[in-house]
Amino acid sequence: MKQIVLFAALICAAHLAKAQTPTTREVPTPRPRPAAAPRATPPAPAATPTPVPGVIEAYKIVNGMNIRATVYNVDDGRRHRVVIVMHGGGYRSGEMQTSVAEELSHYGFMSVAIEYRLAPPHLEMNSPTHPFPGQNDIHDDGHYPEQTDDVRDAIVHYRNDPRSNGQVVVIGGSAGGSHSLYLAGTGTPGYDMPDLAVMLSCGISNLADPNQYALDCVAGEACPHEVVANYLDIPDPAPSPPSGGDLTLAQNASPTHWMHVGMCPFWAMCSLAIGLRESAGIFPEAGSFKATIVDVSVHSHSFDYWDRVKLDVIRWISAPIPP
Image 1 (spheres, rainbow, N blue to C red):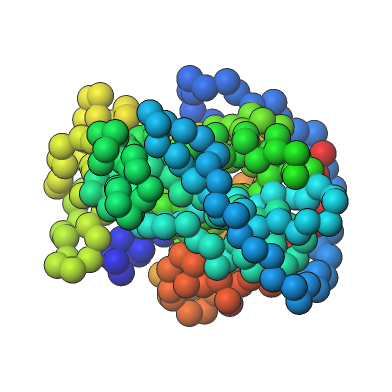
Image 2 (image 1 turned 45 degrees about the vertical axis):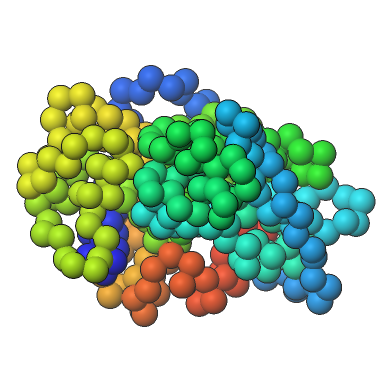
């Protein structure tokens, strides 16, 4: 895992720096938001002492299979800003990140920990671990774009939920962070683009980067090019990068391919130990495009960082969202 974390972070930095020039896209181009004054960052709100029970519900159904979420919402008769929490797991494993979602609900959010379809072996989404029918029963292997489709549908579903105030924040770790950035770039404001996006580790943000295919796999650790090939359902071309249609697919699946100045503000947490960036100055900021990059001194990965950065994240996602 150390190798994939290191490499994913480096490619995330390299391509975030180039985000100001959009590439040709086939999805509808989101409307740029008007320039706004910098967001004031309020003090972190106080947590409520009363725990909120989680309710498991389906946010979409695919061939009879419930794609589920655990929702934590304060039943106070008011509508709340939604925070969708997405787990990591190399696109092929992972379960709902309920502990973080539950904690966020104590700060006045409607917190939603989602599952999404996984690439093989998708054990957590197979029955009997997952309620029947699971991915194994419906013969669904969760390759791109199914995972990002699930995240997109979760954003739309909970934006329009009667318990929601219509504002949606996404928080993702590792692969979930990659999905957060992907929807921040491909979505349409007010519909399937989150209003704010938080990444706890970037995941693999450029699935077409030739450097990752030249890496040697390390026994016992996730191998970047194997993970990507499995997610995309293409032959692993290592040590050469993909070509032809496989290259186009890898580019289209890459969050950095879709970054543009009209995307929502995002907050990325990075470790100094892996040299993700030298300064925030390399990241473009134009119009409504705004990146907040936070360095931490101890190298970890994904939601392992949560206790170190959660107060900063909560302050940031609690502030008024720019128009």
